Length: 60
Image 1: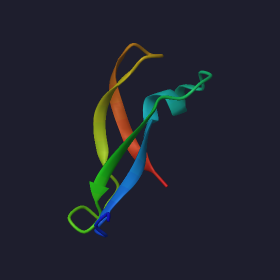
Image 2 (image 1 turned 180 degrees about the horizontal axis):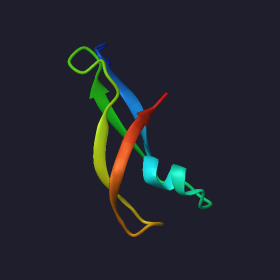
Image 3 (image 1 turned 90 degrees about the vertical axis):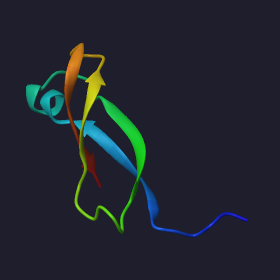
């Protein structure tokens, strides 16, 4: 049986791509412990559409 804990799945979306107005999106799915980090996460991830590393921020 699976453990019940504080780990939740979050979706990371590229902020540069969203602001640029180009079609498509760059999103990643990851997990975080909401007890240790209750704020929204920000990670540097690769954006294949822009072909560079950009800041991805947690959405919803």
